[in-house]
Each structure stands twice: as structure tokens, then as C-alpha cells.
Amino acid sequence: MPHTATGPWLGTQPRVQGKRHTPLDRKTPTFGQLGTLEVRLARTAGEVKRAQQVRYQVFYEEMSATPDAYTMATRRDRDAFDDVCDHLLVLDHNVTQRRFRKPKPRIVGTYRMLRQEIAEQNGGFYSFSEFDVGSLIERHPDLNFLELGRSCVLKPYRDKRTVELLWHGAWSYVLRHNIEVMFGCASLAGTDPDELATQLSYLHHNHLAPLEWRVRAIPSRYVPMDRLPADAVDPKKALRALPPLIKGYLRLGAFIADGAVVDEQFGTTDVMIVLPVSGISHRYINYYGANATRHA
Image (cartoon, rainbow, N blue to C red; front, side):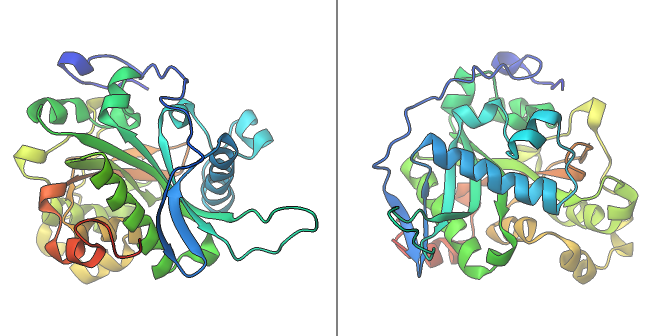
């Protein structure tokens, strides 16, 4: 899929080299624990594969993504970006022990993270195919960016504890790598923008990024979000209809890009989230700890 960008980001589909940016570290520390749940980065290639299986289960079996033959055969949601990303995992250690085998914790949630320095070495960010992120980065050459994506949690674990650990892990990662801006695509279920008019219009009228942080969907895929006038949108109804992930971003202080993009493969309509770390609500920083110590 083509993308538009300028300067050093000019190009077409990112040419990911498919070579892991750093060896997986079996000694990667735990970011936090809550009961039997633990959050940390993937330590082995096997854990990355298991995270891909979780993504397949959520995106393809539960939701409406359309798999190609390879994806269906392997039952893994994967692409070349997986090899250059870090994978945040929530694991449940409350598993049945099998005879003569060391118990293996179950991966129940995952987040994919791509740092700017790694993206620059491998052809760009995943979201380049949908949004003109390059222009945003060029306007802030002194800031360090992080792309978040492929967030999912298994259905039985979609509660406050799991989501809280994912956020705690992401915040720990941000602090560890001196990240100053987070961004990424977030999805609304469905590919008919008119059926999503209330949600899209609410986001456009109430959370559109100021010019300093504004990103625009690439022209060939741009879908207007202001489908209803502001006075015709019921904010309470719109918020109830928004996915929990998007509402979580908004509570943190995130902005929304100009325009949405329909993703036919995944059966979604995507919006771009932009979250400067300096703008994160102090309430949440105090909650998780300025040094990410709440669940450490």
C-alpha cells in the first residue's frame, strides 16, 4: 500500500528487512505483576509466535479479519514488522502443570512497539500505509517517537487488571527508551463509515489534534470523519460506542488525526492516535508512578 511522506521519509511501502533489530533477551526484566498476571517483553521467538497466535484468535476468529492462505494455515497473525518490533506481553501464570514439563504461562494480551530509531533503519513505520506520519516527525525533529499497534486481549481477560498491566508495561517501556511521542492506528469495528458516523464525528469535533500534532490520512485512503454536525452528536452515546482502547487513549490526553482509513482486510475503520508524553494527564502519571513503580 502506498504512503505519502516527505524528506527522509519519502517512499512507498516500507521495506522492512525482516531481520530482528536486536537479539531477544531471555533476561528481559518483568515490568510488573498483578496477582497471577505478569507484564514484560517477549524473551524468545517462541513467545513472539504465541503472541501472533493470540492476535489470530482475536482478529481473525473473534473479529472479521480475512486471512490469506498462509495466515490460515499457520493460525498466526504476522507480518514483516514483527521481526523489528518489541512485543509487550501479559502472561497468566495460573496454568495447569503438565507431567514432566515445566509449566508455561499463557499469553493473554499483547502490544507491538516500534521505536523511531528502528523504523528509520528498516524503511518506516507500519502506519505509513494509512497516515502521513512522516510530516509529523519532520515537524518535531528533536522528539523521539514510538508506534504502538496490534493491541489485543483474549476475551476472558478483558478486565481492568489486564488492561492496567498493558498500560503499566507501555509506560515502563516509554520511560526506559526516553519516548516523547506515542502514536498508532486504533480501530472501530466495521468498514461502512456512515454506520460509524456518530463515533467518527464525535472524535473529529472533540478530539481533533491541534495543528502542531495533526496528522492526515493519505489522500488515496482519506475518509472524512465529520459526517455529522457537532450539535447532532450525542457525546454519551458516542463514548459508549467507542472501543475501550480508544477511550483509554482519550482519557490519557491523546489527539485524533484528520481523516479515517477503511481497512478491508481487518474489517475495520482506523483512526490515528497521537499522544505526546508531555500531555499525558497527571492523574495517570501519578497513578502508575512517575517511574512506573505501581506494579513493579
